[in-house]
Image 1 (cartoon, rainbow over the protein chains, first blue to last red):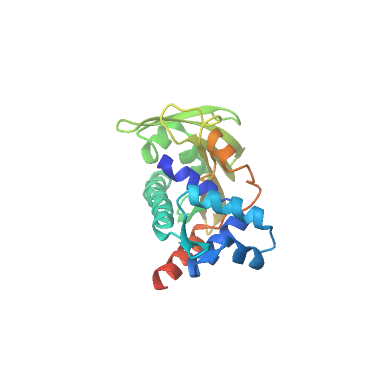
Image 2: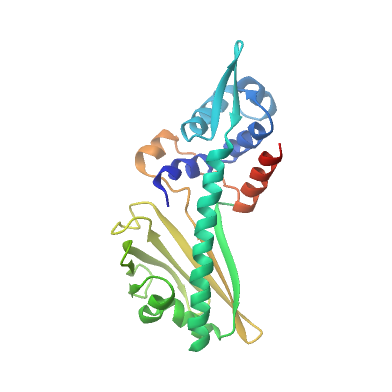
Length: 104
Length: 145
C-alpha cells in the first residue's frame, strides 16, 4: 500500500465527491455549474473540490473569470493499479491456499 | 452498503473443515500467506504474517464462525498495530459446494486514513465508495473520451 494513495482513497470515500468526480471526468465544470447539477450547496461543492484537489484527483484551470475543474486520470489509474496489484496478490495466495487445503 | 473492496472467489476441492484449517492454523498459513505465521485463534487474538524481505505484519482476529467465517485486520506497515494504524480487513466466507468449498475473500479498508488527513478531509466518511469495477468503468470511459 503506497502511503501517498491513502488520501486518494479517503477522497473517494464519499458519494458526493464521487459524483463530482464522475461529472468532471466527462467535462470541465465550475463550482457554480456543479452546484446547479447536484443537490448540495455551493459551499459544500467548494469543500469537496478542495479535498479532491488536495488528493490530486482534480485540477483547477482558470478560464476567463471562471475557475473550471477537471478530473485527472493519472491519479485514478494509480488507485486502480494499486487495487489490481492487491487482487493479483490474492490470486497467488489463494492458488497456494487451494493446493494446501486439497492436500489435507 | 458499497465500499472499495478487493474480492476474490474460488472453488476448492476440499471440505470446508480442511479449508478452515488452512486459513487458521499457523503451520498451514505459512504455506500460502506469509513465510512465517503465528496466530492466537480467538476474537481479539493477535498474530503475525512474516516475510524475510518485507518484515512482520501484525494482525488481529476479528471474526470466527467455524467453519463459515474468518476475518482478520492486518497492518499495512511492518511492526505496526493494526488497531491504531492504517490496516485492512480480510474476511473469508466458506460455503460447502459440490462436496468442496466455495471460498470468498473480501479485503476492505483502503479508505481508512490517519489522523491529520482525516482532519483535512473533515470526516464525512459515512458515504460509500464505488467498487473497483465501477472505478475501472469510469477509467475506461475517460480513456475513450
